[in-house]
Length: 414
Image (tube, rainbow, N blue to C red; front, side):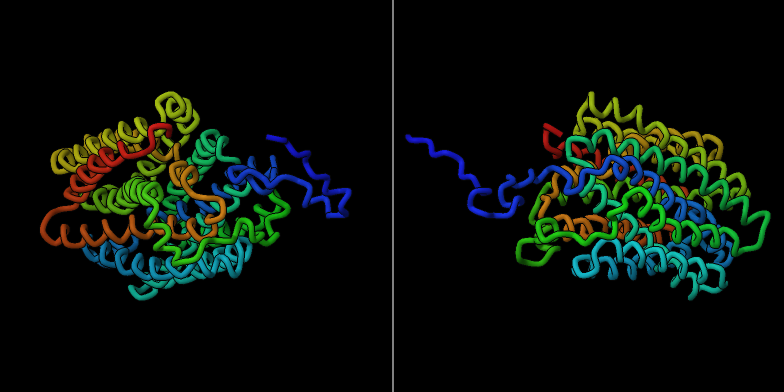
């Protein structure tokens, strides 16, 4: 067979970009070393907007409502509203782009901080709904910028670093939030949260100067059909979504029900903030977990980590009625295991999602946050009308053991 010479586009008068071969789909659209190193810092500030009030909210809700089941109901209602908003995000993201959505997230976070400062169950639900939406939007846009800046083969190194930065925010947030609530006025922790939300887009411009550039059709374009249907037709995306629900659900359970369990045992918010901060400090193990992850592979790593976390969490629930100290020790053991899962972050999704579907699939995938709040909150609301708070930890542990079995379905090469 005769091999034809490669056509010279320049001689035909075509623009230079036509002469260049198309970029590989697994490479970032913008090679930006500063952005790849700076996005974890942006993510950490966004996490601080959440973590600074993460134990303040359930503590104040429990004080005002007086029943753990009522707190679960408030979280259930707010999460439901947040899910409805999240499902409408794919077309909104395509219309506005990640930069404008980040600005919207910042404004929503400030509005939530204001509403949290106004006592009352209705303002609590409204503020919590906006707060969940802020978390969701920040997660979406940081994932979009990550996918456009970091190549797939670098994700195994990037995700542990991102989680390590987030770990610093999760450590500082509960400590600072608890201290501000105990020593200052009620609105002070929420003012800190709003200030962090305002800083996120400013820092993003600094670390990624072209963050305000609109997405090109090559990245934003998606095959026809509904985004949700397209997402559900891809088994690897579904599996990544379910596994993400598990790890996010554990942290949601830990930050909401540990303060309630502590309050029921006469433990003050300062001690609760210490417990939450120390557990969050385990996220600093992310670089070490990254080494273990690369040695074991994502599949075996997830099976072991989810199984260990589930067993320790169930043990904490069993021990809680006997000794709060031993229950706390079991919770720390489960936090060690879940920190391993978190070190892998969103790697299963980022490896599975197609480049041309990013802007549509990322918002759908990120509904795992709302689902990790809605499904457990619905179960816990019913459960707490019959049993004590310790039952929440037992049921959560059993669910995580089931997820460890689902981890065997990850691709072998992962």
